[in-house]
Image (cartoon, rainbow, N blue to C red; front, side, top):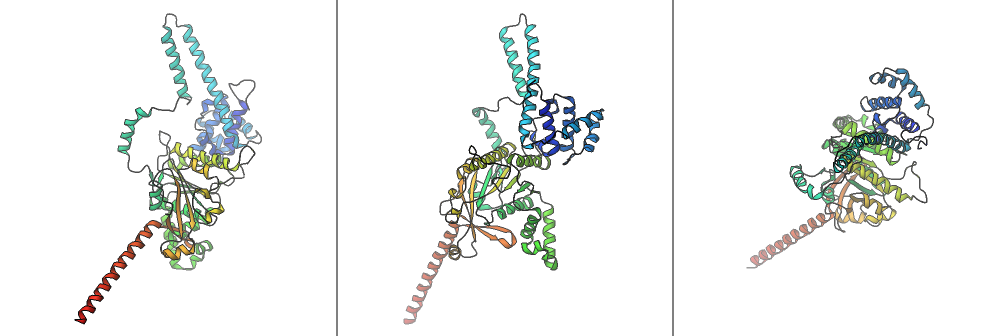
Length: 491
């Protein structure tokens, strides 16, 4: 909605941007490059400052007129002006918050044009009074002026010389405290994907419905938040906080999910004590949760992530998360707010979502864990072809793994104590991955929402071979001793 009268300001764009904030305050974290100075109209600038203050400093999640008027005393004495602009913005009619990027771009573009025009006028004055000044010096001054302006509006170049970066890289690595990331809490899985969850990475695990991919996600979340004190944000598209809390307490206490979900645990003093102890242990953790992501497109989801990063994790002077942290998006799929068209197929929409999440993880330096749905062919084989949109997933993620039940024949052959599920990394960007015939055994205790890691299939085979060799040696030794005893008795 470009203002046809004057592209140096946009009254409609400014009002729409403010209306988005009143309707969805968390969108302020989508406007990190917008300041009150970017607004042409004074009343809009004042209202933006007030909203920014209420959301970021006062943690207000639903803004009322009373909140705005109360906070306005920090910015102006003209309360009537604030009241009037609030009413105008509030009564602006239907505003589609999904267009916030359009409104933001319109306001920022107009702001840059005004600042550029002001800079050009200053340059014009400098040129007119530059009699006797060397023309090359004058041009250098002009160039520096424009370069400084580009830095001010955040459009300066972002590339760097790798050759000059080499020495700094060595220095940085020599001071690095171990792996540039953190454990997944599963040792064999860590080894296969290159050490664990790297900062800036997107890690995918796929499974057929009811194959415990979400159970693995909540196990990782609880393990990291409770045992490693790592902040975790769990974005849940399928379950509720009540259901997840039953799973969490079941995992930590050993009391069945059914007993906790139905309240039956309260009838046993032993179970009650176990659940209370689990609750106390969990209450000190850094696990954050929301199920208010159903129907949101990736831009809305990433707004929630930014909100969490700024409020709970913290952002340093480089724009990175202050702490190592994990975002779990359970699970990656089309939402009701995203449409398929002839020009935009489902695999493209999914690819765009994953690309946006990957870019954000890289920018803020957090790790993401994303369960996805598998094709029916996953019941017969394990490779990256069992993923819907496998090519798009492989482009934008750092590793892809499959969780799958073990057929009864394999369980009986290996032994029930080896594992009842298997985890197979099938596409790995960092780390060794696993050979085609190898996988990680998992112990899945569905009744307790618990998943523990077993040995790899290769290690199980090696141990079995060693056991057979020891038995063969022992049997041969026994036969030899028996033969000697027989020969001795004959003598």
